[in-house]
Length: 436
Ligand SMILES: *Cc1c(COP(=O)(O)O)cnc(C)c1O
Image (cartoon, rainbow, N blue to C red; front, side, top):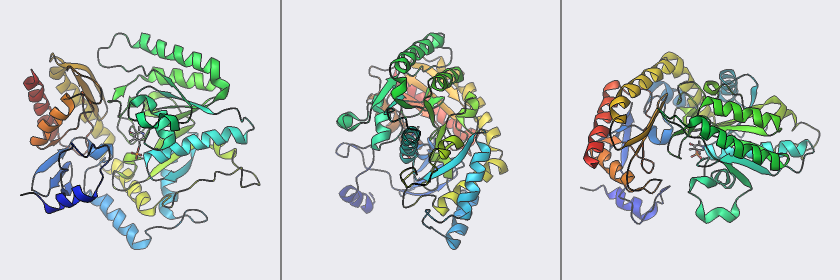
């Protein structure tokens, strides 16, 4: 029996990242608990991708639900120009306390793309406020994904998602991303080649460049492509030498995903800006933060309106989102979440020994709560047929695993049980054996 609302959905709704003509009916989800989602037809799905990488501590977590409820009883929202509130102040204090020293100023918004857009605009205006009006270009990385607004998608023009929009884009120069994996012997040569391209770019156009933007340690949407901390350190040194600002997009890597609270800490690099969204509220409400160095903030101080950052969103620093974020950070302490992530990583490494031995598995990588590998198939890339085929196989078995092209990856909520992870790996093993 199909749910009558599915017919209504198909009549009125336009889903994201979906070819509506050929997509199967969406799954009607009615509730979530821990790592599980329940559909209207009673089917349970184990959420192995944290609902698009946002959920940290599981669905329906009592502490986060209670914090949102309590905040809603007090104050659901207030405009954030000329007004402030306790959850926003407390969260800014908590975030700047957790981030590396030097990242002191928080500008709130509501999603990853806006967090990036704000960093781009701040960096751009920073140079203008300092009298350097010739800086108009950005550097980003091949395969990078930073969201779907115009500035963010310009940075992501190497992702292959934005063909129709090329003429709209702001000027971005791309550098290769030196992806690596377990057992990779050529990573240093790949890094040197990438740095060579970067050096040429900076020598030619460094004085015209506003900032370099990267997803530190892991490119998410490109298929969980991992790079080494050494590369980020070399990148940061070059940015500093050329007076180019460094923007870390930690929309996906933030809040424990790579095993440290933030990837920048694991990399040993403090950028000029860090962009946070996705997991910031534990995955409960839309909220984002662009956090920058004090020197950036100071360049906007003055007597005139023109010198200020004239940017905002109706829901800037929404109190419910801030309350959820504070509760999520409290759960990190209550549940010793970073230690749990280390256990998840160890389980991945154990299971990857068998997995990596399979003839159709290539480039295995494990980092904190992220595990990924490539399926050796006829086609590769985002449109590879093996992706939908595997997704259907997993969904039939109650496993929400959604390959990116031929890349199979896991990025579950941290509350997931070992047994559930083993069930997922058993299904992955069986699926790969079945592909022949
Ligand atoms: C998802 C993502 C974004 C965009 O975030 P939205 O909230 O979807 O706009 C930006 N950067 C990275 C690295 C992401 O993974």
